[in-house]
Amino acid sequence: MTTNASTLSAFLLSQTASLARILHQLEHPHQSDNDPYEITLILGNEACDLDSQLSALLWAYYMQSQTTSPTSIFIPVFGIPAKELKLRKEAIHLYQATDKSLLDALHTFFLDTVPIDKIV
Image (cartoon, rainbow, N blue to C red; front, side, top):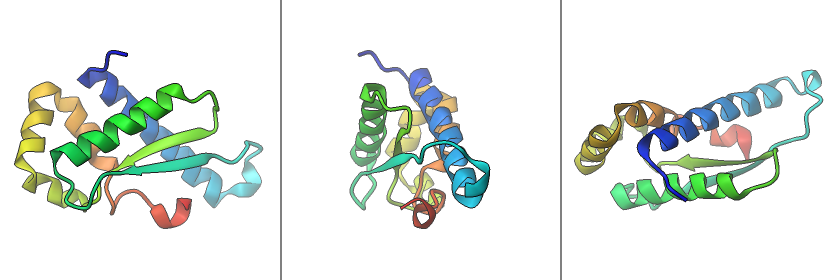
């Protein structure tokens, strides 16, 4: 399986949309006839250094690509608040060097942006 930055950006945008659908379904259960989602959060270690970020991102991508269930969703979560990403200089450099849209797509997947309390 070949994975490039634009593929990962598309994956993140897709997961953002899935997360929005899940939250809508949880907030308005009477409006939905859909089966409930099976959500798996993929977290790296709490330091959230580059290898942890990439591990969470790529493992979620891989697991999503392998599932046959339309209700299984794999969400990568970086174990830091979003504002702390700027402190991870090597990660910022990598994301900017590969594809600027990848960095933009990541904004949804942090401890303070994924509503973990609502989806678990």
